[in-house]
Image (cartoon, rainbow, N blue to C red; front, side, top):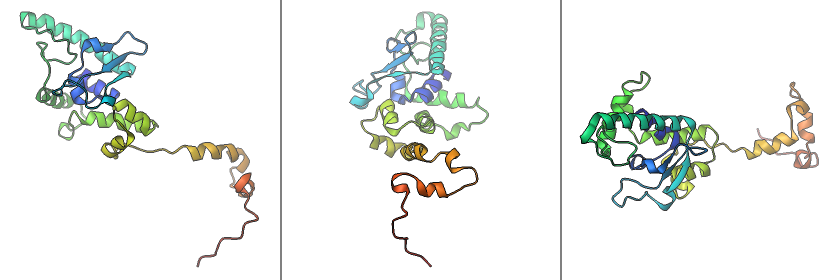
Amino acid sequence: MYPYITVSMLVGVRTEEMRALRWDHVSLDATPPAINVWRSVRKSGDTKTKKSRRTLAIPDLAAQALRRRLREQEADRIAAGSEWKQTGYVFTTSVGTPLDAANVRRAFRSALKLVPSVDPKDWTPRELRHSFVSLMSAGGAAVEHIAHVVGHSDTSTTERIYRHELRPLIREGATFMNQFASVEEIGPDWHMDPLFNLPGDGNRSGDPPPPEHN
């Protein structure tokens, strides 16, 4: 489950997309490495929405985990011998057959028992995608970029489902103000006079004083 968990958390693929991922949709030798998220285990075999059908560059750690998975699967194939079923899926049982949701849940909980800082009861495979959104948001990614990567049709879906993971960071104000009021100009001793002599509306000396409040 190490490769499954790593790719889920660092790429943000849905559980039903992970189980449907095939090796012919994985490009580990590309620059950068990438996966084609074109299928799911839904009845139709298609992804949840049209926007969910996407090709994603993957981080180096996820690519390394998939290479490890390739080696592990080859070892499984040799061990299984004539019982091996060649299905082309990335994540399979020890005899090559596709994983179902119950397989993933059991293996996921067993894997988390090996992580001292984690209580397996607090996690489900689906929450790895929530962790991905949280990491992107913490890294400063805009919600539009997050929605695009996770395959949502619009940002409202992302904001509704992952509202607890998103940390909106509005940068425009700080970016513009840094042009007008620098640390050097205002000074470490909080001399306020320069603040009231900034260009444009920064200088409001001609305006009437604001009403006083008791």
